[in-house]
Image (cartoon, rainbow, N blue to C red; front, side, top):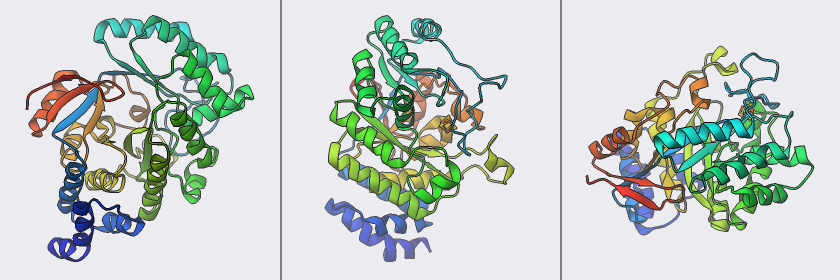
Length: 370
Ligand code: SF4
């Protein structure tokens, strides 16, 4: 089957990759339907190299913070959100958060803070702006990667101002980039099933489009392994590719495996994604997203051994030290919440690649010999 697959279905796609031609929607579905995992990995690694990729595998030293887990939206895949009355609900003031970040920085010297939150209806614009302003004043060299497009939309609604005005306020306060969350799957059918309370995907694109035009780089994601079809995964990737053609501001794509624990889907019998599906997603992402330079194997979600394998399936980034991640932990991730730099370097080096510590914008900070 594997040899036949390569000869009959993957060979024309390979020719396109070698020729530097773009894959179309049907090619994407063909790749998803292939069960020849090793051939997909080989093709994806070829695509990465044909497009100029080298042996470098990047990571960033970062701290994950959440200001609030109170959320009005109730996405069915989410194990993080709470209502304000739940015992473990929290909303942290800007001063508390800054104090905590300063202590962490003294210990680890991270270069990035990654912060996403629930859509808390009980706060205001200043709650979001002041934490950026205070962090920038306290830690001026740290890049602030704050607020998904869904949160930007939520803040705009809270404050009664436009997406552009929210982004300008945050940029003026010190915002560096946006994380890629809130994308889930763009297809309306899936969104209705898994996140009926979330805003329309047009808002996600509008906000990333505006951010890129304002000089704010962003990241993009896809949440897979729930009720979506292969066609809906590819449709999502093609929409991201079109946006990147238009504005070029996506730094990286991160496929996110759905973790069902503590969600409605766990009660319905949904399981964690398999390693085969995780590797296929990395490979197909690399093959389809020819204009997004970095594909992340997010170790906190897939585990470090699988992330190491993903480096041979088109990934060139393992995210970072990820101190104190809460969202995937709430949904059953068992990968721990902190990888120290020597451990990341060991995993990358033993995969035969060159470990490079980067900043958020992919400037090289340090490299380790293979
Ligand atoms: S995914 Fe985000 S918006 Fe949806 S319920 Fe969870 S915290 Fe709220």
